[in-house]
Image 1 (cartoon, helix red, strand yellow):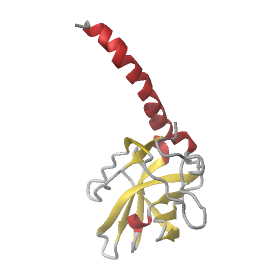
Image 2 (tube, helix red, strand yellow; image 1 turned 90 degrees about the vertical axis):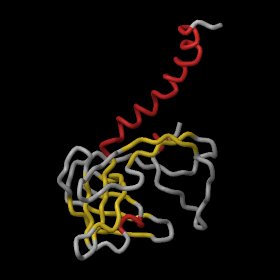
Image 3 (cartoon, helix red, strand yellow; image 1 turned 90 degrees about the horizontal axis):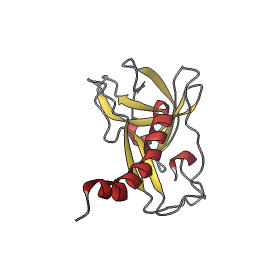
Length: 169
């Protein structure tokens, strides 16, 4: 029988080091992720999800389905319960992304890259609010989920998706 301390050194220590990059990336990029809520004309929530700051002057990328048919769009920062009203700059229904603008400057932007070097099997992180959050409580999880690229679909025009090269290991 292997003593518990030796078992931990063989199995546990390598696992701890393999997870350090997840914590580091999460800590480095957490302030670049925001919550997004869309409302209809009656101020009723019709969608919620995550977005990422892609410009210091308040441009945010999110999924188009989060803001679909919205009359009002609000952006929440994890460290603040007060929202910022956003306006829609661009949306692409087919690729499911939208660009928003809030009137805030000096934000921490997420460094963007392309997906051209991505390969099936790459480990990736998702930082955000999967499943959305509620408008009433303004709860924003800013959770971290580790995953793996399981398939790659190239768009007909050859474009890749928004992604951060730091998110690939």
